[in-house]
Length: 266
Picture 1: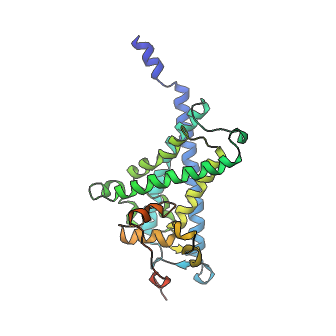
Picture 2: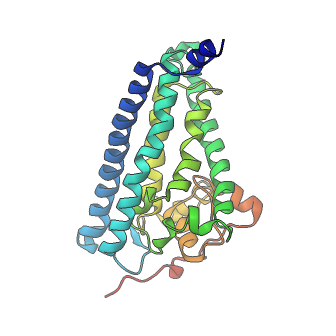
Picture 3: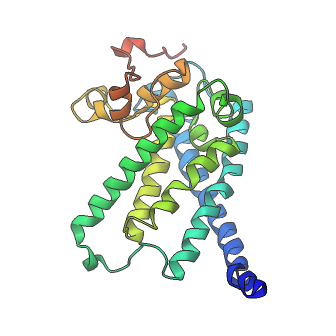
């Protein structure tokens, strides 16, 4: 009886090898995506002559090599932490154990957009409250201090998380695929959006026009102007995509005018 129970609860060797292989492949993909997007934005904003950059500079100083190395080290280490839950979810999908579907007609085109919005809202709510909790003095140094070594972040700070922070975030989207139906194309769109917004929000420049940032749509979104305030003050602007929770909880702080931004050194 005990032998039967052990055999029923032990993963087959082939499954374990598949999970390890897919973790390695996804780690490489995640790291490559990060390096490509962050590297491109870094080059466009920081390595070209300032007069060619069509953006408003927020950071006073250009990214220091030591800080960038720190950001790269944490981000690349975090890649496998994000890859492992995704590999587990992929293995479960192959066995028919997730809510991921391939036939668009099963739920209709409208659900592609609705499911994407739902995932973003759930992820945003989770991150807001997790982010606030990570700033508690009892745990900050263990879970979030690594990210805040970048007081003036560069694009490479976008995924520079301590291992504990990466683990607390990495499980959410893979867990959702077990309960909320989603198409792989929507998963891919969410991952690309998450990468792009995180890189842009940490890049040290505001790439969006001020009329958009402070307009009826932009004033509800996290932008570099908004998130840079978090790296300055720590005790505000905890959101991921949207400013909804910051506004509801009284933690939303924005500079009143462009004059509040740091000047570009002569």
